[in-house]
Length: 244
Image (cartoon, rainbow, N blue to C red; front, side, top):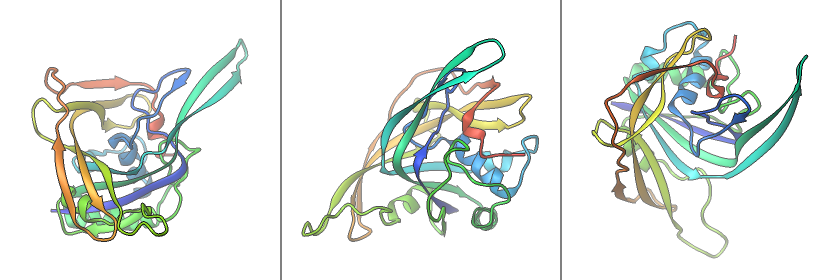
């Protein structure tokens, strides 16, 4: 299998898997639903078009720079009352995202991200990406590709020499008992958006900035629940990258 790598960096990002009503939260790293929305936008797909081929891709995130949480306070006036909303963002975060699948399909996605049909956003329309998004397709598994890719930010200061830093990898997994996250998109249709759970595993990695050598220590986060279920939701900022 091959892996498509993307670099997601911006002054502000917002990856909400539980955002509703007046409180618009963000996760600490990109959600699979948000990245699938970004790819669907790049391909020019409408919200009512199928996304099964995108959702089947194995998904992973490497946290190069976690950023800081920021809250933006809003007021909005309707015909009847004033609403107060609080929107949370990740400030100055940098992530490497990987999607594993068929090489031919990944090259199609690569071309689309480099020349997107719709504008690309990192979770919300107010969060356009900074710099080149698409890194390219690697002939490697998801985890191997994420580990081999050089750091996207410098961890070495003047006179410090070689720098070793701890990075976090969050990967799709089939292991029963792993942490479950409800961000697997089944439909972006505005009348009936649907999401399911996926199993997720976190890994702590030590990365040497000056060469590709890495040493991995795996930490599986356990979360015991019933088998995967499907849920329906009516509003979700993470899909704003798919525009009409």
